[in-house]
Image 1 (cartoon, rainbow, N blue to C red):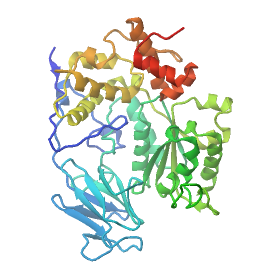
Image 2: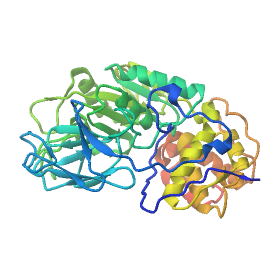
Image 3: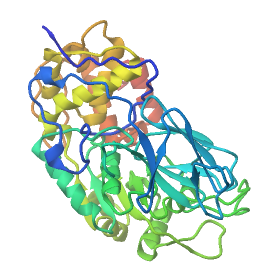
Image 4: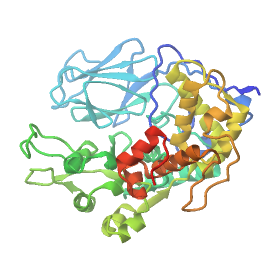
Length: 467
C-alpha cells in the first residue's frame, strides 16, 4: 500500500506544542465558510512549509507597528522606544517584543511596575502566536501579520480551523451570528469536539477581538480556590493573600471569558456567578465594594444540564442565564468527511513536534474515517501523535486506530461502541470511552460507582476487575 503523502519536514528551529483544540482551516478568514479548505485527491494534501511571515502589533485604533524580523520592538513611555505610549501605567522601558523564526513572537517584561500580560496571563517571558493579545500597563494590542493578511485573518492560538463538511460550515455560520451579539453563549458537545476553539472563534469575530481572551477550566479548580480564581481577592483577605489578585473576570475585562466545564462549579460559586452575570459587577474576597467588569461570558460543557437541574446539581436560574444563546458542536462522527483534512493537519503538527516526517497509508485514512472516535478531535490528534512516535515507517491502520475491524457508524444514544477482541481489550475500551465521555477519571469513577483509585488501578495494571 502506498503511503498517503502527508509528510512534512520541520525546520530545525521551529517549535510547535500540541494544545487541546479542534478543527482548523489553513490561511483563510476564520469565519468565512466558503474559504474553508476543500479536499481533492489525497495527493493534493501534501503540506507546504510556509515562508517566514512579517509580524506587527495592532493597537485598538487599528494602528499597526511592524516588528523588525531581525531586531526587537521596544515598548514603553520613554524616549528611544520603537513603540512609545503615553500611559501613566507604562514604565519607561516596559517590555521588548522580538519576532522568531517559527512565526511567533517572544515577549519579555523589562522589570515593569505594572506587568506584562499575554492573553490575560501575567508573564516575565513568553512566546505568543499571531492573534495573541498583549497588554502593557493599561494598553492592549494584538499580534498580527503585517503583510498580506488584513485584520482577523491570523491563525487561532491552537492553529488554523479545518473542515469542509456541511456540519462544519453550519457551525461556523452559527458562531459568526452569535459573535455579533452581547449575550452569554453556551457551547454544548461531547468531550474533545473543540469547544475552546469555538469560543476563540467567537472572540476573534466579535468587537472584543483586541481585548483579552481568558479560559478557565472550572472542573480543575479546587473548590476552596474557586471564588478567588474567578473573582479575585484583596491583600489580607485570608492567610497567604500577600497582595491583591485579579480573578478571571478582572483579567478578561473588556474581552471574553471562557468558563469550560461550567457545570462543575460548586453551588455557592454558581450563585455568585449568577449575580455577576446579572449585574456586571464582581466582589473580590475581602473587598468592601463591588467592581464593574465588562466581560462576554462563553460557557462550555459536555454534561446533561437538564438532568443536573432536575437533580439539584445546577441552579435552574443559572442554566437559563447561561443558555441565552446555545450552540451544539457536532461530534466527529457527524463530520467524517473532515477526517482526511484533520489527519493532514495533525500529521503536520506531529512532524513539527517529533522532528521527522509523519506519513499515513491509504488504509490508515480509510480506517480513521470509519472509526467512531469516542474522544472526537482530541482523540484523533492524540492518535496521530502517538502513532507517529511509535511507527517505524508510514502509519498503518492497526497503529492509528485501536482495532482495525469493522465499526458501526455510531453508537445508539446511551450506548458504547466496543470493538470485538480479547476480554482485556474490550474491557479497556469500555473504561477508556467512559473516561473520555466524562472528561476525567474522577467523574468516570463517580458514574461507575467505584473509587477513583480502583479505576486507576484497573487502567494501570491491565488486570480483570475483581467481582
